[in-house]
Every structure is written in C-alpha cells, then in structure tokens.
Length: 507
Image 1 (tube, rainbow, N blue to C red):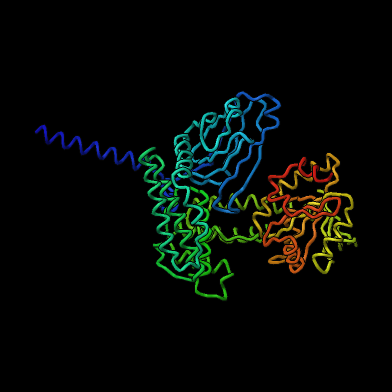
Image 2 (image 1 turned 180 degrees about the vertical axis):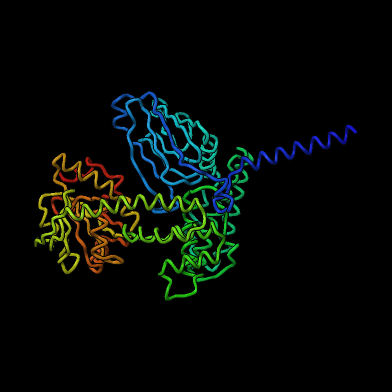
C-alpha cells in the first residue's frame, strides 16, 4: 500500500513539474494559440546610471536599436539620461522577446531581450575602469526579464569564445557552392554542439529561445540557397517556431517572404501584385506563418507603404498581427501628414545653378537639384567649383538602400553642428535614379528632413563616380578637401565621424 501511494505521489509531482515547465515555456508567435496566451502589451526598459557627474550625464550618449518584425529590419534611437541618471524607453510593437542592441556611450555595449519589462543599472565608477561587452561588473539586470537577459548575454560571450570559427566560413558559404548543403549541415552541427555545451554549463533557462534562433538562422541560409537556385521544397521543412525577434529571426522572416514571392508563387506576370501574393500565402501556409510572410511587403515610399499595409490588414488572420500593423499604419499616417505639410511649404520656383536646376528648397536647410553634368568627372569638378576652400562630404546613396538611410541621422547632426560652429564644411548627397524616381527621392529627403545639397543623378554618372572611388555599392562616402584632394578612405560610416575629425581635414 505504501508503495502504491508513493507511486501516486511521485506521478502527481512529475505532472506538476511538467505543468509548471509548460506554463513557464514561452509560446511561439507562429502558434495559433498565441492570440489567446501570448504577449498582450508593450514592455518598457527602465535604467539608471550611478556615480556619474552632471557633466558626464550631459555628455553621455544612450543609443538603442530594436530588431523588428514589421517595417525596417532595425530601428535606432538616441536618448539622454535625466538629471538623476534615469532613462527609459518602450517598445513600438507588441512582440515577444524583442532583441535590442544597446550602448551606453563608450562604457558598455549589451544585448537586451524585452518581453515583460527590464530594469538595467550601470555603475560608471566600475565602467570607467573596464568597458563592458555584453555582461560584467558594472552592469546589472532586474525585473521580470532579468534572468533571460543575464543568460542570453552569457550565451553571446560563450558562443564567441567557444565557436570562433563558425561565422567566417558561414559568411563565405555561397548558395552557388555545389557542396552547400553538406557544408551548411557541418557548420550547424558545430553550432548546435556549442549550444548544448552552453546548456550544460549555464542551464536551460533560455534553451527554447536559443534553439529556435539557431533553427531560424539555419533555415534562412537554406532559403537563400533555395531562392538562388529556384528549388521548391515541402513547406513543413522551412517553417520554424518563433519565440523571439532577433537578427537571425528577422533574416528568416525576410528570406521566407522572398522565397514565397519569387519561388513558390506560380504566376510570374503577377508576382509584383502584393494582393495576389498575399492571397497565395494565406491559401498555402498556416495562418500565423502567412501573417509573417504578409507583414513583410515593403516599399521605400511612405504613401505606397501605407497603402500596402491598409490593404494587407484585411488579409491578416491573427489579432497580434493586426494590432502590430495598425501601430505601423498610425505611425505612417503621422509621417504622411508631416510629409505633405513640408512639401507644401517648399519654395518650388525653379532656379538654375552651376550644379543644375533647383527643384525645391526647404526650410530645414535643404536644396534639391536635378543633375545636369554628363559624366562623373564633370559632376565632381562642378561640385568643387561650387564650394571653393571648403571641405565637401559626398554621400552617394539610393532611396531603397536601408544602410544609406540608417546613416542619415548621423550626417544630419554633423551638418547642424558644423553650421553652428561656422565650420567650412558642406554636405552633398548624390542619389542614384536606379530603382527610383524623382518623386520618391524628394519624398525620402523630406521624410528624413535631411539638410544639405541633394542632387538626383543618372545611374550611369553614379556608376562612373563609384568606379573613380574604387567602390561598388551604397552607401559610398568621399571627402573633397579644400586643396582639391579627394579622400575615399576617410569615412566608412557616418556614425563614426565627429565634427572634430572633419574640421581637422579642413586644415
């Protein structure tokens, strides 16, 4: 009898443990039960910087970058700490375990995962002695998401230390490689062994998140291979559960969308019709996967993107997808209204200059010009002549180039700093007409409120400039010094440029 009761008791204990484990496990965004049991509200990060002087707090740059499911793959922002050292920011979209890349000046760089709420504290006295990468003495986590953030940052360091030879060969592995699948499987066998070693050392608190992110990374590389080689496979083999919104997961979303649009969708003539492709996704995939595919339709023009989202809204199946696209539509409505107001305020009287015809001038210190130079060399000479004895920062970009647009806020700040300091520095933006048109170009400049001289240039002229600068892509930066010397190595990314660096080149 004692054995019988002991057996019953043990069974009940095991059931309770299993139930507790099930209850604590996150729910996949792709599970149809997510609407009922998943995340319901935006989460917030609150922080505090200790042992910092008022001057240190005033000069401290707090930057964070959300990884997104909808809209741009990443969105960055910069804030200041309050006088008491506190700061806070909130999610824009209601997404599970959203990855945020966070930096506190030059003192700390860490990766946050936001689900229910996170409190983060920095001790500047400790950080002055040693900069922190991911986790260490001088940074502490509290709140509901604390354990996840501690373990995920330990995982990043563990992976970097124990699997240093994974990412380089993965980057070098091309979809055209005849041994692609074998090499990919070999690399991810190593990655999964590293993951298992981490669980053995640190426990399995984040096993669900890590396993799913590894699976997403593996599958996105497979999708790239299928997309390049136009290979169709069973749908089940390309569907992975989603528990977090990280860089790897974002890549997976993007390539799943491309694969459906360019490989699976059967009618070539209507491949560009997002309504038809969305209908196909709904007919072909489970509801939540179809929603993820359909949330990824994009256009670099605000009005067109807003129209796409408003149409796609009626084709979404899940509440979470509808809530998030409504948030995006609300944001685009605000941007579109502002865009229309700025366009209406422009001086639209055409004027001829040495650089070309001025199409519009805006109060945010921008003039938009249609190029008249026949080739790249002539355009460079004209720009030099227009701004003698000045340092000219050239930014060659495209309206559809996300990295180009991501760097614009940094050059915008530099423009205002240079103008405030009365430094002899000019910012000139050369936008290609490849894959774009004049209206999209004007709208993008106005959307960004990007000051400076903007020239819309034929792609053959841009191609010649890129060849002259020994560059092959966007963005490309170059500096023309006051003595006429052209330096193509001075700027890699605008985010790394300071006014002091530019002023030094004026001498």
